[in-house]
Image 1 (cartoon, rainbow, N blue to C red):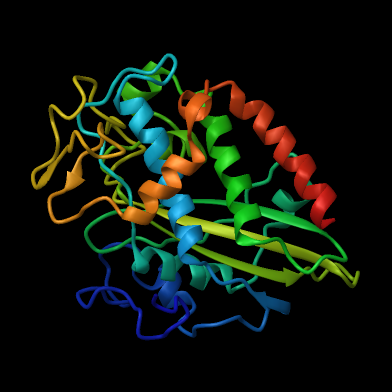
Image 2: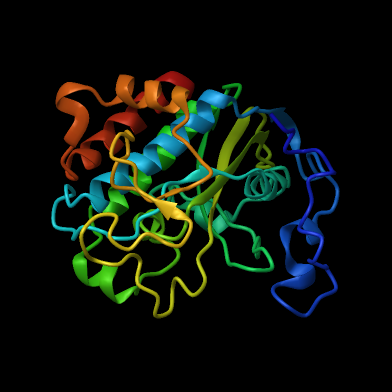
Amino acid sequence: MEDRRDPSIELDSEYSCSSKVGCGSMHVMCQYPSPGPSENCRGYVEIPITEDDILMVIHYFNFRRNLVAGGKEYKLPSASDMMMVEWDERLAAFAQRWADQCIYDPYIFRDDTLLKSANDVCRDLPDFDIAQVSTRIHGFNFTGASVESTLHLLINMISSDLFNVTTHVVLSGYAPEEDYGAVALHSKAYLIGCGVASYLLDLNTDGHRMSVIYCNIGPLNGMFLLDRYYKHGEPCSDCPSGTSCHPNSYFQFLCQRDNSLDNPKEVMYSRKTHSSANDLWPSGYFLLELEVTLIYILMRYV
């Protein structure tokens, strides 16, 4: 697995920080060209993302998208063009570069009802836009939450937002970037990459630690303007060129790139995670799951 702090992982060669196309010098890799923790970081703890963590992320997004595409998600129409999500090291490198800056928004931080973290200014690629979802865990006298814990919290936040996504939102394409549920359902956004970091907050109090996770998702291309999140129709009936559905796939309603196959480990993870009664979780379940997860995190890490 590539090191997301490796300076050799950079932007596409056609991208230039001096370019007036896209975000130019405002790109996270241009604003912060040096890999690793910045001078802002106090008590920085590196939290590596393992292959199992990656499988957890990919599995969650594909599981939820497969439910929606197949018309099995309460109140949402089926999707004819929903693509299968894959991990992307470029997006992960961008997310890690931002996480390693140890920057937080004090206005967001003061409101404990907002678990989202401050996002970077821009992380787009030359040919498409990228959205960013994030969350944080903080507390006193703990060494830092695991990737699994922060991922579970982020997943629950997305699930809670999914509860509020309506047919009108899906078909009109109108929702703010802060609506994580809508981001997760954009049919063409099939790439994801995440970065994690843990550091001490400079609040004149030793031992107050923050763990953050950022996940970049794309391509989007006008997602928050007039673009529908996905096309309503028979599952797999309108897969993008170069993709198709596979009836024997664990995610049979998702359009897979023709040069990609189900990851055997992901299939095992999927079957282990969602067996028997858990296969079709009702959307409302995630509101309770969010509360339970928050309590669990507080008891374990704070």
